[in-house]
Structures are given as structure tokens and as C-alpha cells.
Amino acid sequence: MSRCLSERTLLRLIAGSGREAQRAHLAACRRCGVRYRAILRDLDRVTDLLFHTAPPRWSPSLLTRYWLPASASAVAALAVVLIWVENTVWRAGAPAHPEEVIAFVSDVSSVMFSIHDAPTDDTGNATADNNCAEVGNAKKS
Image 1: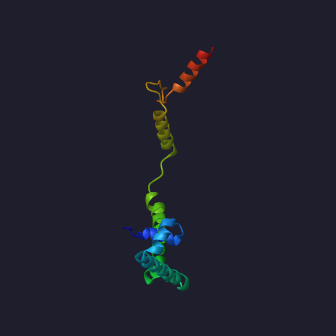
Image 2 (image 1 turned 90 degrees about the vertical axis):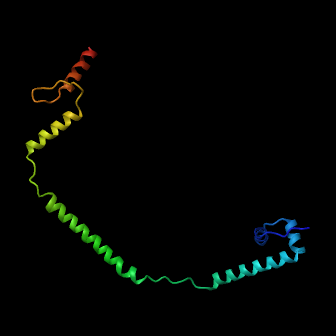
């Protein structure tokens, strides 16, 4: 009892990559021959449709045609509003005095770069850099 060929095997034979035993079965088996010719006929129809049918023309929908410019305008308006708010509302506070800024930066830098239990001078600034330099010079001597 011989087994008929699968669809995959028939497609391989159509593509030209089947084995000789499969080709011999196809020539001898009437049922496989009918299926083989049906697949060939379907492939020819698909090929004809692809070659002789024009590709569909794309036309933008009304929704895209009207909403795309509207959304771009809304984004531009939002950007203008954000710039206005940044310039008028967020910067409305009085600017800090330079002395306050210098004191704040000094405090932040002394905290960030201080060494634990580092000595400070009379103003509260760390003097660790000077001490480290002195220790480094003493070791070199």
C-alpha cells in the first residue's frame, strides 16, 4: 500500500526540489496527480492576478486629511503656551542676590567635597585641601 504525497511534498515537487521516488509516485498515482494539477492551477491564477491587476490606489481618508493639520496646530499652540508660561509665570519670582547665591554654592560645595571630620576655618569652609597638601609635601621630604 503506497502512501500519497503531502501538500508540502507536492509544493516541493512544483518548486523542483523533490526526490526521484516522489516524482515516480506522482507519475503513477492518479489522486496525487489531480492534487498536483490543482495546486499548479491555483498558483497560475495567483500569478496572473498579481501580474495583471493594478495595485490599489491609496487615498487619504477625510479623517487624516483634516485631523493631521489640526493636531499639528494644537502641538504648536501648546509649545507657545509653555514658552509663555515659562517666561512670565515661572520666572516671576525675584532673582536671588549674588551674595546669597555665592553663600549657597559655597555651602553646597563644602558639603559635597568635605572629608569626614575635616577641619574648617573661621567661616565654616573646609580646609582639608590645604592639610592634605601639607601632608603630601611632608611625605615627599
